Length: 345
Image (cartoon, one colour):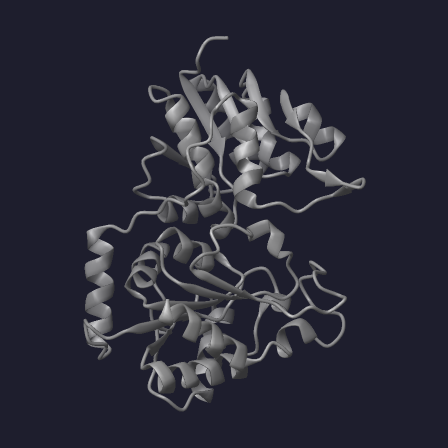
């Protein structure tokens, strides 16, 4: 079979999943260095992945309306792609490549409709007849392997540009953060749902104690939406030690990358900033409640993943139907102990 000249990759939507897709992109690039590789996904992930050299261009999915879909399909047909890798699982994610008549379309087939939309179908991993959670890095690499691309490592790729570093440095300086001051970057929000959120009072206690014991300055960062800004305000209001909260202008994903790169330690719920920290080789403490840690059980050397072992975990629910014990009973003391281990290392 002839080598592909143009390859389309449908990017996952969540920030963390997009970062965990970078080893698959790297494998694709190494296997087909002369092919044009085009990534297609949400506008936010274009900002997140800017500078990564495993793809050549990015097509934004601005809308999901019928008219927007048909316009995208016409644009894809005009570019005459040979392959499409559909990394998300949904039928909708595979529809554009199918309608654009891209000859070879690879991805998972979780149901009959999805199977009809791809030409090279992978079954989801199963154990004793049930779907088995595996690392998302491995999950995406199985798609590139299906197309004959050898692995090129499992490290995550992200790039922080110099302009973002300067912008973040200037902003922190204006807030009184010295250039040589050690920073605890804290992201207490989560877009998945309330079940992923560690209580603001717990964040406040952990941040205060880390400040007292290790001297790190907590810098609280929300995503640019009202819910997360409110969470950061609540954490900040409960704190007693010196801290900084970036609530007036939370910034872009470019700024988040630069903030993570600046941090001595990152503290986060099980959300995208965790994977940004891993990609940028920053030590990170992750607080997990309803999700299965096997989806992200990789590159753990500089991570501490904290989870309580209740029978209801992992439930996968966006809102806890009982008392949210998986997060409320995860103590701030465990976080402080984890910080001690990572800082000692």
